[in-house]
Length: 272
Image (cartoon, rainbow, N blue to C red; front, side, top):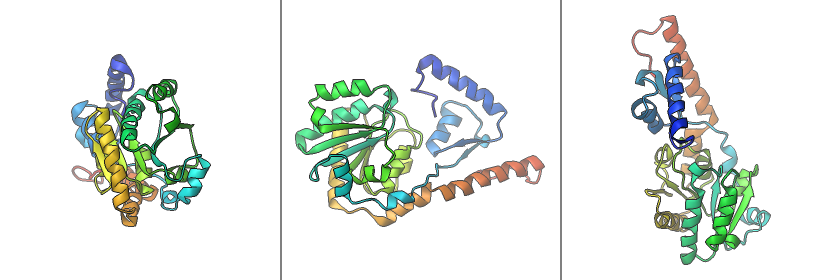
């Protein structure tokens, strides 16, 4: 959601007020995680509990089960085969705190000189991030790729996926990275803990201290060297967040609303 951290104090107040008005004339509000539902119902009081259904994201994820060879993917990005590649995919916006990721990776480089940070995406903070990379001595160790469409190859090039956002709903890139079998290090915000709860190679970052970010990334690197990607875990992510499951869940929400509208249901209609 965008109720806090996106538009400033005044913009957030206005956004919440508009959403509360809309919720009064809405049959169902769909949240994409249980934590987001809690925010909508309890924290920001946007809508009543009985009006909110939780339906996780559904994405086309099968492509991430079949990645190209790592050597080929790295060659396309001019990455050394022996580099330790930490990757990020997403917008370059203040709420994503990619500057925190940069600072954490600078500390990781003190322990792992071969570390390389790959940033795919673009946005308003890119110029500041480029300057920060220079100040941290990371210019030769970070690649700003801009927006990419070759996502399977991009994930194939990585050793670890990392994100240090201040706020998230259910981050698509995190789901993609897990489907690709990557160890991940991510801040414990929004729907992130719910996404990674079944992953044995996911490390949650509990603070905004660069040292804690570095420690989590180092743990994720270690997790990647200790155990190979679990095919069952990858398939479980695809089943949990796949497009087919999404269609079924959304259909259930609509059928429930229609049944109640027609008076066919007695009492509360189960939410998806």
